[in-house]
Amino acid sequence: MFPPDTTEDARDRAATTAVLPIGSHEQHGPHLPLATDTIVAWEVARAVAAAHPVRLLPPVAISCSHEHAAWAGTVSVSARTLHAVVTDVADSLRRSGVPKLVLVNAHGGNYVLSNVVQEAEGMALFPNSKDWAEARARAGVVTSSHSDMHAGELETSILLHTHPELVRPGWESADHLAEDRRHLLSLGLAPYTDSGVVGRPSLASARKGEVVLAALVEAFGAHLAVL
Image 1 (cartoon, helix red, strand yellow):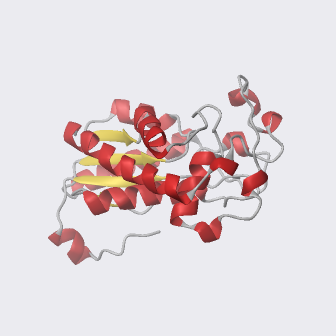
Image 2 (cartoon, helix red, strand yellow):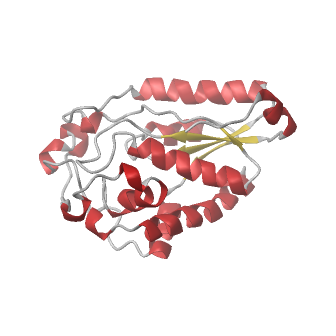
């Protein structure tokens, strides 16, 4: 999950916009890897870079996963640290002649990224909620975004499409819904699920994952035009 470019490639394929995949290292139930969000962010960013004139950066693989701290393997950094990393990357790019940056975020707990983009110039956050909603609808994802919060139909579909070897057996019977999660920020996810799953992975398919990625690549063009 790293761009293969050399410094010569970067010079010859000069771009004014870079894309920074941002994932996480957190539990995704018994059937998906800890790196699921990073894999999703990377695959979205890589597909975007193949279709649009942008520079692909390596992913940020650890972010704000504090709501998953009850499960083994989860690692987090503070919102302050994530804010600093992203703004430092943007400053470095700007000094090297790349003034615009798109954050390709695949972890819902990275709330601070919205504030980073609000405070910055020449920065965007992708995909936004509408981008995800349209991609889900096009792919025929049945479970709502609220119900399908974690390791559910959407994420399992994307991994079945991009890295089926990483999806462990048991996803077909791992469904768990927790519609009322009003104290999530205060208590974390553990009071709402024993397995770590909130969603319906049993409805996932590789085809849905393929269509979701294609829809997101198409949606990216509007963000690039805004920048």
